Each structure stands twice: as C-alpha cells, then as structure tokens.
Amino acid sequence: MKSKIKPCYAVLLISFPVLLLAAAGCHPYFNTFYNAEEAYQVAQRDHRKLMRVFPDSIVVTPSEGMAAQYDRAIDKSLKMMEVYPKDRKHQDRAHFLMGKASFYKKDFPVAIGRMHDLQTNYPQSPLVPESQVYVAKSHIMMDNLAIAEDLLLALQKEYPQLDRNQEITMLLVEIAMRRGGRSQALALLEGIRRGALPLEKRLDIILRMADLNYELRQYRKALDLLRGAPRSRKHPYLMYRVDRSIYFCLDALDSLDPALAHLAAMHRNRAYSDQRYEIMYYQGITLRRMGRADEAIAVLEEIRKMCGKAAGARADTASLCGRTSYELALIYLERGEYDKAAVALEEAGKVSGSPVASNASVRLWALKRLKELRTPDSSGRVSAEARYSVAELFRFELETPDSAYYYYMELSADTAADSLRPRALLAAALVARYQMGNAARADSLLAAVISEFGGTEYARRAQIEMDVEVTVVTAREMAEREFRSAEALLENDAVEGVKAFYNVYTQYPDMDIAPRSLHAAAWYTASVLQKNRAAMTLYEELCEKYPESVYCKTGAAPRLAVARDSIAVRRQRREAAKPAAGAAGRDTTAAKGGGAAGNADADDPEEL
Image (cartoon, rainbow, N blue to C red; front, side, top):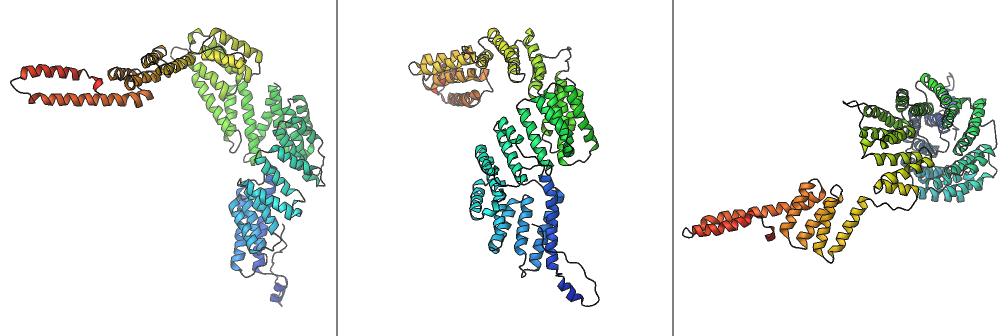
C-alpha cells in the first residue's frame, strides 16, 4: 500500500507563516509516519526484485540493507505512537506497517503479535482482513499448517474479495505442497486455471502446475501445459521461466537434441539477455550429457571468464559461478585431468551459499586422499588395500564410475589380493549395473562371482542381484543355524547343548558368533550343569581368546574376579588357622592341613 501522506516541507514566508504551515498540513506526527512508509517502500522495491529469483517462495531472506530499511520503518512507526499516543489517526496503519516489515524480515512470531495488536485495538479498521492473511503466511512459514489452513478457509468464506487474485488459493496450494499433497495442490490449481485472471497470474499458476507434474515425474503433462502457456512480451521473466521449464522437461525425458535446440533458441532471444550465462550453463551440462565434452568445456569456460571479472557479484550470479566451476570439475575428473579438476573444485568450494560448495569440498578432499593412496610404498608398490580404497573414492566420492570399474577389475584379477578379489568383482558388477547402465556386463560379472567364489556372502549377494533362486549358504549363515540348533538341544539334553555351543566356537573362531557361543557354553555349564570348575575354565578361555569382546568384559571377567577373590579369602583363612593347631598333633595336623591347602590351591570352583 502506497502512502497517502505527503511530506512536510518548510515554507519560508515572512507573513502568516504559522497559518501557511497549518494549511500545508505540516506536523511532525505526519512526517514521522511518512518516513516510516518511505523506508518500507524502499525495502519492498528491492525485496520484490530479489523475490523474482525465487518466485515460488512466500518470502525470501532480505539483504542487510533491506532489513535496515524495515527496521527504520518499525522504529519510525513506534516513535509516532510513543510521542503522540492520543493522536490515533494512522495508528492502525502503523501497526499494519510494522507487522508487514516484521514478516518480510522473517520475524514471524513478532509479525503475528503486531497483527494481533491491530486486530484487537482497531477491530473496525479496513486493514484487519488483510492482516489476517499475513498471520496465515507467518504460520505457514512456522510450519503451523493446520492453524494457517483454518484461518485461510475462514477468510475465503468471509472476505471472498481477498481471493480475487487467487492469493488465498495459492497459499492453500502451498500448504498442500508442504504436506506432500501434490495431487491436492494440482486439483486446487486446476480449479482456478481457466478463470478470468490477469495474464501474469495465469502464467504463475501454469508454472506451479508444471512444477508439480515435474515432481510427480509426469514430464509429458508438464511439457503440454508449458507449451500451451500464453506468450507475452510484457512479462519477459515469466516467459523465461516457461522456456526454462520446457528445457527441464526435455532433459528429464532424455530428449537431449531437442533440449539443446531449445536452449539455442533461448540464447538468441534478446529478451533473455539478462539470463544469457544461465542459458549457457544449461547448454554446457547438456553437451556433457551428450558426450560432447570439448564443446561443454568451451561453453563453461566462457562463463568462468565472466565469473573472474564479476568480483563481488550478486548472490544468484555467484551461485551460477559455483555451479559452473563444479560442472567443469566433473568433466575434468572424467577425463583424468585431476590438477584442473582440483582448481575448479577449489573455486566452487569458495562460493558461500552455493548449493555445490559442500560437495566440492568433499571431492577436493577425495582428490588429495587419492594422491596419497596412489603413492608407492618403499618397495615401489601400491598395496591391494590402497588400490581398493582408490576404487571406492572413484565410486562414491568422485562419482567417476569408469575409473572405479577399472580398479575393481584390476584387483579382481590380482591373485596376490585373494581376500579382496570376490569383493572387488562384486563391486565391479554393481558399478556396471547401477552407475554405467550396462546390465549385460553386470550379469556376466555376477555369474563369475557365483562360479569362482561359491559359498561366500559375495556369491549370495550376486544371486540376489541377478534375481535368481538363492542357493548359496554362507559360513555366517551356517554358524547362525548351528547356534540355533545348540539352543534347541538344551531343552532335551543340556550336556549335548553345551557341546554344540563349544563346537560352534571351534568351527568358526574368526566370526563374531565365536565369543557368543563360548560364553553360552560357559554360562549353561555353570547355571544348568552346576559344574563350576569346568565353567571357570571356559570363561578363562573366552577372555584369553577374545579379551575385547563384550562377552568377556561384561560376562566372564566379573565371574572370574569373584571366583578368584573367593579362593583367595579361603586360602587366607586356612593360612590363619595353622598357628592355632596343637603342638602335640602338629605333624599330623600339618599333613592334614597340607591336604586342605592343596585343595584350596586347586581353586575348586565347585564350592562357589
């Protein structure tokens, strides 16, 4: 809302100055509020330009300069009300202005509070209905969707004129989208699309519908909507958004030749001169997808030159520069030009707020780690473990599947790397299937895993990947089966059950199930068979073989400590009883006492 208050100017006349000033309406009260509205309008003008970059957002974080102007609007409004509390003219507008300024600053609870003050203190103000819209927007931004929806539906019913430009309906669409109800949002938009709306609003609705269909992977529907959108030279940015969305749909449909031709037409369109470099960026990534790496590099490097000259560029340009450097880095990685890739990744990582900055930092770390791993050791070789780590870096961090595949295959053929061969061969098959899109090669490698490494967990995974009957039983599965069999034996024959637990331990000593089985054998020996000496021997073996296992630390070790303490106490008591024996029978008693001491030294756990 633009101010209806005019600023007060000094009128320098010798005669009747007071009368003329009064006639001009000059009063500090009005001047103060005029300054408040002026500051708000300055912030809004710049903020609307920023929000054009994010057209589907309810509000975008303002720059520091915009926020300062909003603060000035709030301060001036507060001053007007504090200095002139009895003059209530325009005070409803001051509350409304402060509420809007707080909303656009993204101080949503404060915005709600100020709008509620307006509604409470000035219930007859014509600004009350619109203030409720800002309350609803604030609740949406705070994720209080149910509150916002109830408020908007009530406004739609009581004040239908507020929805004449479909603002309330569009907010209900936003709520549906935030709840994940894309179909509901589409239904709402379809209901208003064919209405008598201004061209700008119709285009906005079509774009929202196309975006929703795109998210639902209904690319053809989105494309039909966009191609049927009305065209207008009066709205070049909206036209650009339509054409850009058409490109996204063609790209999603893998129609790369039509997509590239569409981008070329956009590049020739003078109305899109402000978006020239963004269009070139899409040309670069499309050329890369088409395997035309040299052409892609040429286009992206041209953008990169612009970025080098545009120091201190605005946020959207900086983001484009970051994405361009990142895309270049990916191409250089695919070509094995790691030094060039590192430079491009450093550039991408320096762009604060860029969506690729974090990924660029991870890949830069991966490149440095790659260099370390590929450095030969003192014998002039790179170990199998290091080469496997190199393959993993290429696969997961650098996303260069061809290089990962090469290293996996090299390892799978290296007879000196027996422990890694089945794992590497399976990994090569997975890369071929899921990252290189070569199902035939993947199936061939999976069959080789099953053939060469039958009985392993890798062969079992290969059968699962090939979607065939799983016949491979791994050693781990066998161990688990035998452990469950031991548990079942306990119900009828505890001795045989304990033996079965001990057999699991001896057959699979290097698996996690071994300490678990040995602990079970010891526990049932003590608790069910009541053979404490044998149980203590088993507990000692458990802690000797697996000192760091939880079964030793929390199961065996405390029991062994108690047993040893008890034996030590009995030994001390027997030693203390020796002097009390009569001198006459010392030899005989000593002999008998020696026998008792011998039993104590034997650490007989049967007494525990």
